Amino acid sequence: EAEVAQSPRYKITEKSQAVAFWCDPISGHATLYWYRQILGQGPELLVQFQDESVVDDSQLPKDRFSAERLKGVDSTLKIQPAELGDSAMYLCASSFAAPDTQYFGPGTRLTVL
Amino acid sequence: RKEVEQDPGPFNVPEGATVAFNCTYSNSASQSFFWYRQDCRKEPKLLMSVYSSGNEDGRFTAQLNRASQYISLLIRDSKLSDSATYLCVVGWTGGGADGLTFGKGTHLIIQP
Image (cartoon, rainbow over all chains, first blue to last red; front, side):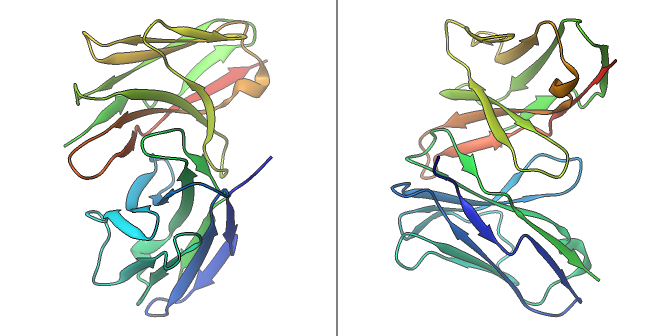
């Protein structure tokens, strides 16, 4: 069964450092999402791509977060500089089209010290 | 703002019992509805889509009430393995950004 891949699974960093997360969606899925999930909360959308284009990044803190999907396949989410409040699970999801069923990767658990 | 509201629980239910929880949504233009299950520190996984006529998958039944803007999930003969957080998810199209909005989840604990 096809899966969404994410790496790393865990990341510990100090505040003010830069971190990057990678996501490879299910083959053929045009829509890719990055979510942030704080413990006890539901996932909150950070950015949505349709192929290589950003469709929605209204909730992305653009002063420190950036995301790209240059070839419309895999994607990278970057935080620079990381802050203590960025500690969370970062989930990547993909779907054939929006708003179809989304399939999630295992996530990257970020801890900022 | 598109909102999805759920009772966070926890719902403590004895094994074998039936449990139901609802979810309300604010966007009347919503077009797709799902229940996702999330185990502790794992990613959300699709439990079932919710169709207008209601649908059943084994012990799980989902229903949609468009007039009152809520969806429900019923679990019969609950198992210990049903313990998880259940996320209500609502989707819409239009406005430049099509996507899904997740509720904060309902925490279910099945007790032996």
